[in-house]
Length: 70
Image (tube, rainbow, N blue to C red):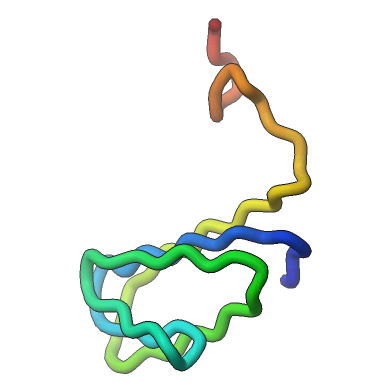
């Protein structure tokens, strides 16, 4: 799902992957990708987490979660 002006954070829990054919990640490493299409290739069985944020969306200065009290 393409998101214009997206910022993506990839964290690797286990294994080894290549990001955009140029960055190799090993267990415990992460990479931040902005304004690029992301292509992930697993070099071995891997567990990864991908966060995608839209820089143009609305946000709360009072905290990340609903119900925060300032």
